[in-house]
Length: 220
Image (cartoon, rainbow, N blue to C red):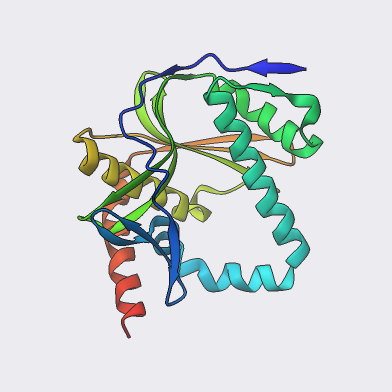
């Protein structure tokens, strides 16, 4: 079966495809016209880095599978939102099922402002590619698409909300537009769809503390 999205686009910020990441002292850094900035995911995932590194070392094959699943799912969501034709028969079954779980929520998006768009800012000192910024149920939101082996608890995904909050602040610095909603969509291999909504303001202090801790640790 072939499908195609039907989304309106109002792209505000260029994708900045020329900006590439590099490894500096073991950390991902983006070189921009305003200087070098640590990546959003590096900083917001700093406190959980040892846990994830240990899990990857103990489960190398599952780690590869999960990584591929995430990449493939993001690509499907991106193509759908770009109104590109997708032949679901060419998609691996697991990823297809996850994408089909996400589709009803993705279809609530009314207007797309950014897709895999590079953002950076001097105030936070961070940079990264935001999954999606769009009007969702009538309100501008930072939207992230996730696949998961099992259901998540809200308390376990603080790093998702911190990432989204960082992108909201970067967007505000870049465009002057305030974003008051975060939407995390998670499709699970158990057949469930979870949608978590939050406000960036709730996580600004946590993000500031996270940035301070990261800088303190890396400068020891």
